[in-house]
Length: 175
Image (cartoon, rainbow, N blue to C red):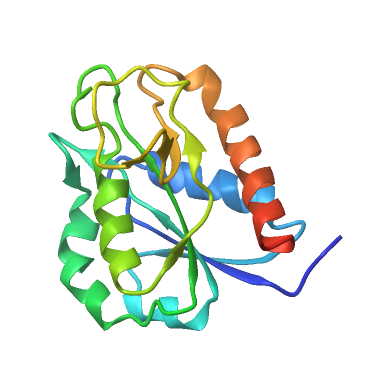
């Protein structure tokens, strides 16, 4: 089953981990959707305006920081029209070395984009992780998909596959 729905994947990457996650997400979704990927280091953030469905990928660096390319792009997010757009988030973090700031970058981006009118989808349960706190938590759920390749590489493929199945259902059967 192929739909005409286009999804824009916008990611920042330093160590290639988030780019690899974006590639895997693309592979999982491209049999159903038209996918276009953008490395924000090389792309115009305003390209987001061309999509109704957007996936934002950002790892959390150091103690709760946005990845460098997202730090540079962060003020430019205000120029994007997120009203009516559905936005899902994914990112990498280390829940054992940084248990107090695990996936904070996702929470920082989600809060700003939600305040600009974006509608979050693709939230995931946080109970399969071992951390203390996160700006990405909304109640018991993360604002999106969290990946910890440093400590749980064996769970990465399953987590990505399940998340892609989940967001496919959410897109094709909106509430």
